Length: 237
Image 1 (cartoon, rainbow, N blue to C red):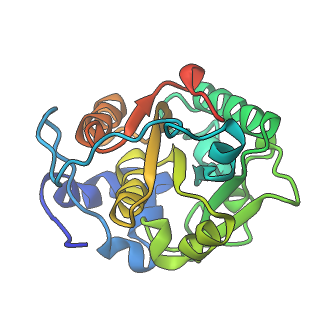
Image 2 (image 1 turned 30 degrees about the vertical axis):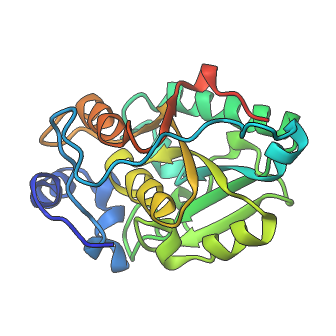
């Protein structure tokens, strides 16, 4: 996947100097994975793909369920820290909790991704901020993957785990919008997965652009490549 550098990547270091909570994506190999988000709606930086459908024609719900998984990215304690939370953190957490409950109700597997920051980062491995948020009620049967890159596929066995489970469709939500959520969604598309992005199920921090603008920009960029749905409109098999 060719890297693109431009508006967002050039501004990233400025934003990270202002917010220690956002330093996660400058650690480890992730600093080399950041690519630019086109902030003007309707100007995608990558070739568009057809939006994925929730269920294939001719499939039973049981067949669709086997091929689906929910991927929750970096929903870690530090992101919801009252001292410096991501934009709309409390509302986001409630949406993520509803997604988890909905997935469990229909036995769709949930994969939790946890970023591992460097020394002194708010998500440094083993620190309280690194832990997945307890309100998400992670079960022993859930798969938890620890990563060090924005694209989860690049530093974990996510691809192998999905293949072993027969998963071809991913529902993506979490943090941060323009980094790990965006890069993982693009990584999934590049590997042939159908992606549903929960349009109000991801967030980030204010920077040179307001967080709300960045969230909207990511949704606009990916709109023709993924299926965009609000959390309350998400239908799982």
